[in-house]
Image (tube, rainbow, N blue to C red; front, side, top):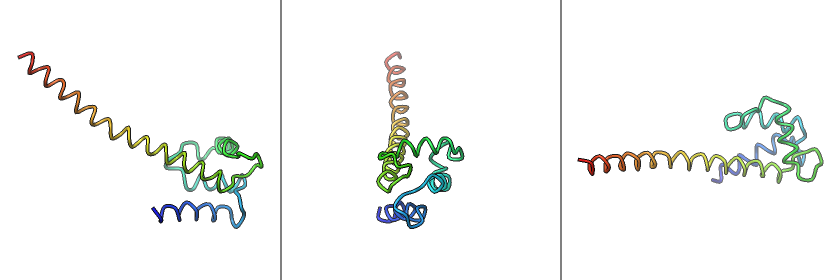
Length: 108
């Protein structure tokens, strides 16, 4: 966990190049280089611009660390939900198979 937090902070600091927030180009580069495996349209400058504008709570045209953490939290939540759904599906299939087997036994 500590390593993950250090990575999240380090990626922001490196991408911000010593500034307190990410400008448009810096944010585009961060998304394209760091999030291409879990997000779609990371190559689309228009899609990334829209994402940046959605994160930009204070409307200053930049993404602060807090705004960046909103994105990280959202992505972590989405990954968690995907994994939860993936884990539930095999259990649901097992229940269907068991129900079918019970129905077959009852019919014989």
